[in-house]
Length: 49
Image 1 (cartoon, rainbow, N blue to C red):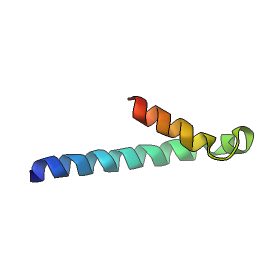
Image 2: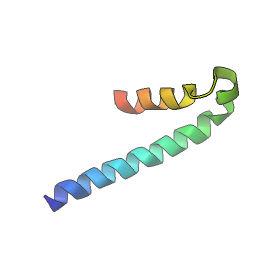
Image 3: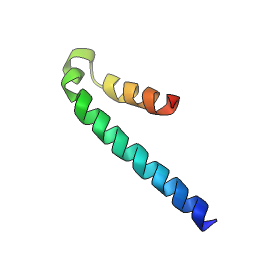
């Protein structure tokens, strides 16, 4: 059980890290596409993998 919880914690940490990197890279596009669209695109990308 502890191994499984640790595994999920690592997966969550990795997802948060990737979300931060993508948000940083896509930040210049936000004024062009509108508020919330970058976050929605990141969610779709991370959920689709």
